[in-house]
Each structure stands twice: as C-alpha cells, then as structure tokens.
Image 1: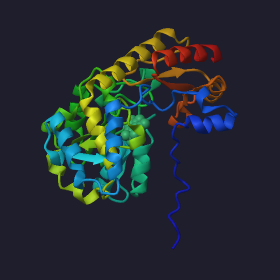
Image 2: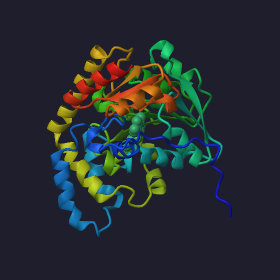
Image 3: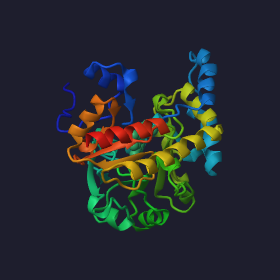
Image 4: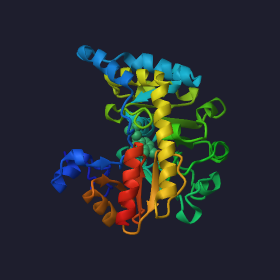
Length: 355
Ligand code: PMP
C-alpha cells in the first residue's frame, strides 16, 4: 500500500534550536542567545524540577488513567467539571484532539493569516482543509469579531488566537462572545490562549458556562516554562465531555509532565516573576528598538525589519537567534521573544546594529 501523498502540504517549520544553529555556524551553543521560540527565560519552576526528579524512579509505571490529579487540579482552578478538561501533549495535542473529535473528511476550518500553522496542518492530517481570515498589518493586526467573520463561510472549527502569534494582538472578551453568538450552529469556536498569562485580558474559560460552542486551549510551555515536557489542555463545554475518551491517545501526557505541571501550578511566585519579566521586556523592545514594532500581549514582539531572512541571519552571526516570520507570511518582520533583562537589552543592541 502506498503512503498518503503529503507533498502538496506545507511542512511544519518550528523555530530552530540553538544547537542546530550553532552547528551550522561553527559556534558553541553557549555563545548563542535563543529568542526565537517564546520560551521562558527563567526556566521551569524549581518545584517542577523537583517533582520530575521525585517521580523519575517510577517511570516504569503507566501514567494515571486520564491524568486524574492534573485534570482535577485544572478543573478546580477554573471552576470546571473534570470532564471539561482534556489534558494533552502540549496545546498541539489538544488541536489534534479537536480535529479528531469534530472533523469529517473534507470539513473546513477557518484560521488566522498570518497565524500559527499547526491548526491547518492538523486539519489536513484529518483529511480536512483550511481557509483563512486576514489579520492585517494595515489595521495594526487588530482582531475583531467583524474582521474574523469577514471570511467566515460556515466552517466546522474557527480558530482565534489571543494573544496572537506572531503579531501579539489581543482579541477582547466581548469579541469572543460575539464570535460564539454569531457563528452557525455547526461551528465550534476555539480560542487559543497559549500566551494568555502575559496579557491583561482575563481568560475566556469562564465563558464556557454560557456558550456550548466554545473551547479554550492552554499550555504549560510558555509562562510555566515546561515546553520540553509537552503538556497542555483544552477546556471544553460539558456537552463534549464524552468525546475525550474517544479521541484521547492512551497515556498521551506522560507522568513526569503531569507532576511538573501540578507543581508549576502551585508555584505562583515563579509564574509572577516570569510574567513580570516578559511585560518589562516587551515594553523595553517597544521603547528601544529603532524599527516599527506592535503592541503585544504575549512574551514576544513583532518587529518590521525589511528583509527578515537577511536580518535573522545577521543577528545569528552576532549570537542572537530571532524568528524570521517569512513562514507566517510576513517576510518583512522578525519576532523576538522576551528574554531576561540582560538578554533583552543585548537583543535590542544587536537588532539596532544589524537593521
Ligand atoms: N498555539 C500557539 C499560538 C503557539 O504559538 C504554540 C506554540 N508555539 C502552540 C499553540 C503550541 O504550544 P504547545 O504545543 O507547546 O503547548
């Protein structure tokens, strides 16, 4: 049997790791500062590291069914029923669960352009397809229900990202309400809050009490600093509860990740410090960079630099990895993550020098 021909589909282009870049440049990875993947510059919570160490001797045992403790803890945090929490391997895992649960072959989803590419990739893995709505530079990447619905044609899933990657723009709660109210009955509105901890706007999770066509994605990869462990979740309406058992990969989230996430949720000091640093850094970029930038609710700032590929290469030669957003459809911009104060100041210096 021939494997499915995926050649017409885009490939996932993640930010490159410091080691790969260092190898190409003949540099020591230690000489590089990586501000290309919106990781937490403070690392994981020390309590999360201790929890992983404590759980490591028991990894011969399967994780708990449905990741019970973590599910309960997340449900309690948001005032949800346990059945409304779908723990997954990163928010990416939740995107796959949603595709599996709701997409029939040839179903369309609606996604932002520019935007995070995995929504459409996941839909295509499930034999669906994606249409896009614009988040336009001409409008300073503003997001509203009107702008999103301008391209809406009854798609099965509508993804909205807030704060948005790579622009940083935020979708206000009232706009989310409006989306849930205005879409047709068959459409699920999925709000991706991967960067929500950094924004001033509260989570849309409490809106699940009012709307049964709304889901929210969250992750431990960003503000909680656990990207390498791959742990996230979807908060879904009660009406979807029994779908998880049908789409869940058995033991998708590993026990070390679950233990770390539980410890990270309890370490509010680490979370606050991470948020505070990111908020300082994004203001610092906006004030100090000599190029146009946009207001960001996330832990990164989009910068208009001209030829993004040339600029990203030039910063790499100076030891700074930033994200060239050409693959997002913005070949004139780079996205720079919020580092520690020292890393952020250095990044400003390098970017101002090379642009
Ligand atoms: N959504 C958005 C908008 C993202 O930028 C990312 C990661 N870069 C994800 C989801 C996936 O995050 P993870 O799978 O690490 O939880």
